[in-house]
Length: 202
Image 1 (spheres, helix red, strand yellow):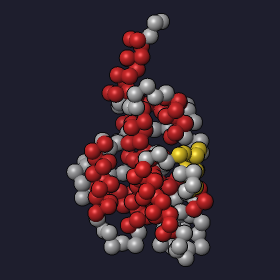
Image 2 (cartoon, helix red, strand yellow; image 1 turned 30 degrees about the vertical axis):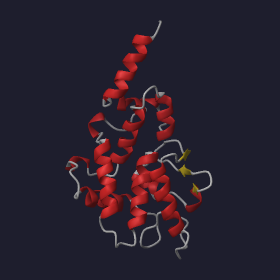
Image 3 (cartoon, helix red, strand yellow; image 1 turned 180 degrees about the vertical axis):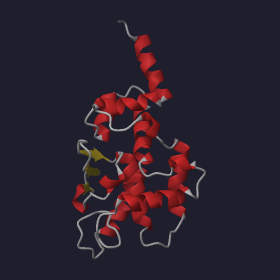
Image 4 (cartoon, one colour; image 1 turned 60 degrees about the vertical axis):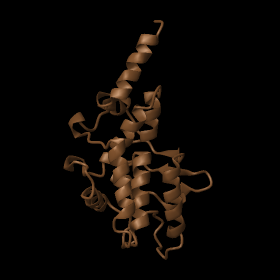
């Protein structure tokens, strides 16, 4: 009963596609006052494997600059967690945006507020995803913000010798079955599994 989505719904970006997307966000619409916010959102959402609705829930105090960590408030029965930001690109852009954010007059406690000061919502993030993807070579079936969560899952599960339970914890999956779905899509992870079996003395 653990899986909440079917394998047919999994659309993710390759490393090249994800880097292309980030490069586009850096170059497009740079005059917008939300440019730095949007770049930080896409980087932290992918890094932490966040749903669009979870991005909006991040509060200013959830980001600990000194510890280089962020508290991820998970929804839909997932398990909230604190993740260290060890990716320098992610930390640099998030910290840069954070310094801008704490100087703004918003009374909102949210790190990524909308124009009204309310949490940025899923609809807005999907619009932004489609907007930025329109400047890339990424196929239209991947123009959904949730593809970033799947992208992170695929990156993690393909790490050599990683324990699938570590991937489960990182993504906040309550059930291991949700995490195991990604094995069907990762050639690297499958190869690692076969290598472990072939090297086993059992």
